Length: 145
Image 1 (tube, helix red, strand yellow):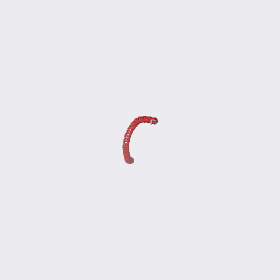
Image 2: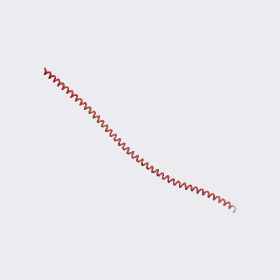
Image 3: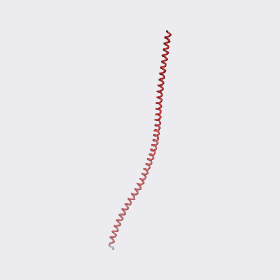
Image 4: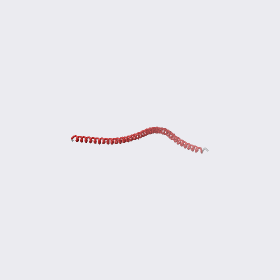
């Protein structure tokens, strides 16, 4: 019975050495895991900070976009007002054009009537002058005879 004892002690020593090796390996692996987990938490903090920065940039971009939209709305309102003013001015210019056309037509009509009146005055004046000259010639002829 005792003769098997050194062999069992040897086997137990071998098992303990294998177990010790496995525990050392597990301890090394656990250490690596802890380092990895610690690194992951640091990376998580960095990623959280980067996400915060991205969020700030997105807020700033959204603010700029809102300002651009507001300015485009104001620009659109100004363009619509300009369009309305242009239509109003076009209508006013067309009304003035019609008024000038009517005034021009009336002026031409008035000048034509005035010209006919001057022609009648000229014809009547010529007739009166001819009658006066003929009367004068007849009077001179009658006096000289």
